[in-house]
Amino acid sequence: MDSLRDPSPAGDQEVGTRKFELLARRRFDASGYPALRRLTCHCDGKRLFIRGSVPNYYHKQLAQSSLADLSDELEIVNETLVEGRQALPDVRHSVQSQL
Image (cartoon, rainbow, N blue to C red):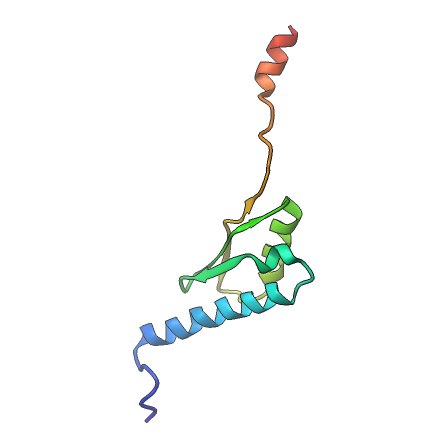
C-alpha cells in the first residue's frame, strides 16, 4: 500500500485538477505569445477557468482554443479580459440624433 497517496476520491480529484492546471500552464508558456504567458488557470474538477487579461480578442480566443483538447470531460470557461477595449457607441442614441 502506498502511504503517500491519499486514497480518498477527493485526493484523486485534487491531483487531476492540478494536472490540468499544469498542462494549461505549459501550453501557455510554450506558445509564441507573451500575452498567453500572463494568463492563469484554475480547475475545479469539472471546469478549467482561464483568467487574466490580453490585448485583444484574438489572444482571448487563442488561449481558449489552445486548451480545447485537454479533456472531453472538462469545460473551458474563458474569463479572460480584453485590455483597453473601447465601449461600443450607443447605436440608439446615434440613430435618434440623426433623425
